[in-house]
Image (cartoon, rainbow, N blue to C red; front, side):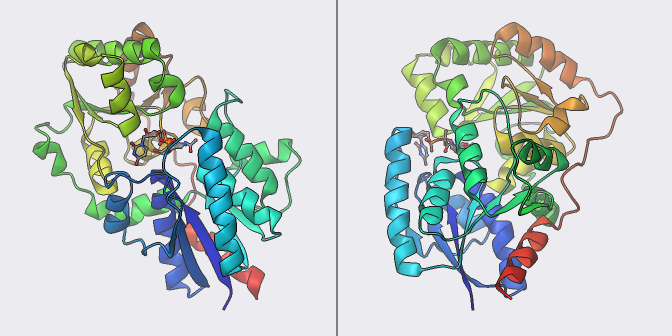
Length: 361
Ligand SMILES: CC(=O)N[C@H]1[C@@H](OP(=O)(O)OP(=O)(O)OC[C@H]2O[C@@H](n3ccc(=O)[nH]c3=O)[C@H](O)[C@@H]2O)O[C@H](CO)[C@@H](O)[C@@H]1O
């Protein structure tokens, strides 16, 4: 049986792995060796996802932990190379755009092991953001590129990448449809919130949260927005963001903002289904909010998911309080349009696994 190594390390990758692994098992496709880089290590950022989504225990844990980009990527590169030399897989699967992704693609391609990239072709400004660098490098090292939408496939074509590109849809959409009946709506009341009376916020991008002035402006904008709309603001905060709020002494700006620890997949989706709208700088969650039928105010200069902003469903906002209040007011209006659904038919993971399985036949 062929052997495929699947490399994960950060929250959004656990979600994608869960769906791929379900299909690998269902289709008895290959010997699936799971490697966890350890980029995310807190129980709420890692273990909770493995438990909830029935992901197999990692066969190798590389414990790279946190650090500078160079240090993290270098640790992952060196340790993953050792795993590859030991396991000698027929292929390596990487997901998304994290430091784990790029290290995996680099280690494998240097050993001439074919790389398959799930969520290929996403492009956004600024071009020097860490995730964009990781995406471009990973795509150009990959032999199989699985895109979520036509836009992503077109982005690759503009860079001359057309071989091995398969536009299959989004595995996160598959997972959402499959798990929807299990979402934990009860968390809403457990957090003291009323359905349809709150805004759901997530923030973790370095360019938003590592800058004291910008983070302060965002919090000020959210607090004002909540008061203006008479809605609560609930904010499951990434550890990086909580650390910065404390370090910069910004807790005084949190009036009306309920900060809670990071929540698991079923809880975040339960909250998404019950919120009025979302505010986020997460690549994954700006889509998941839309899957749940909600609009998202995206605090970024640009987005890789332009299908959702080009049609006016999601809006981009600048990291300043006026723009957040202005765009937040606009997004709170329901205008009777239905959410866009550009991410496939719920069978992306099946298509990926069948395609790769056929390579080994
Ligand atoms: C460059 C990169 O890979 N970025 C990805 C990473 O960003 P993310 O912001 O999580 O990036 P890191 O993995 O570098 O973590 C940032 C900081 O968060 C703290 N920390 C992180 C993990 C943890 O379990 N505990 C903890 O305390 C550490 O202080 C760390 O330095 O994951 C996000 C999902 O969450 C993805 O959207 C980002 O694309």
